[in-house]
Amino acid sequence: MKNPAMPVLKGAGDFFFKFRNALFPVAGLALALFSGPASFPESGAVNGLLATLGAVLALAGQILRLMVIGYDYIKRGGKDGKVYADHLVTGGFYAICRNPMYGGNTLIVAGFAMAFGSWAGYVLAVPFFLFVYASIIIAEESYLAGRFGTEFQAYKRDVPRFIPRWSRLGQALEGSRYDWKKALRKDYGQVFQTLIVLTLIGMARVRLAGGPVSDTKWTLLATVAIASALFFAVSRYLKKTNRLASEVKTLPRSV
Image (cartoon, rainbow, N blue to C red; front, side, top):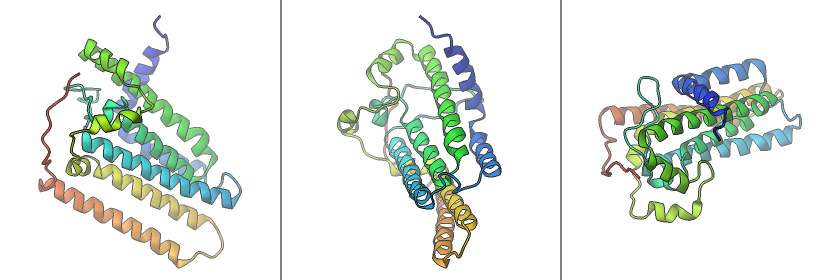
């Protein structure tokens, strides 16, 4: 029996896919305007611990993205603002989970919310982005089912949508070589965004904490910000000068 909610989710997914690049800035601005950092929970010690865990979680999500891209990459940019794929990717991390990149994204969003430390981050931002990613996944899988038919259905039956089958990872990566140039070329902008958002959150927390602030904290945060900007500039230069061209040659995979 067909789920009546699926067309609604697909419609929402198509919408969010088209405007997904604007979601983070808009959501971040709204969060900054309507809630203050380090305001929830009220316990400073607990809030500080959650902020540290949040930073670790966001960095873990970013590392997962880089690992996924370095082994096998799905072009998430679409075509003309719509979901598009020229072949069905099933290698690398996609052999153990159908949506590992969104898993990384979810960790990043949850990490940002914990690092920011406000009720709006926990109650509004995280559920909102979970809905966004879930609806985009529905839209993407609807497209893949229509384009690749039985091939996608076989892949869908064999590989879970969200929870990775880690026991398969060794077999999935066997004989593969990690392409760090491809990972850097494709995701240096997201790496910069993750680092700079965590830095800005840290600066906001220090600024609004009240009381004396050690120069060490500001120096550390400023150093991270400068290093992030240099990383972005150097990575962009290397990409534009074709110095990040992949050395690993892979053939498109179809189930």
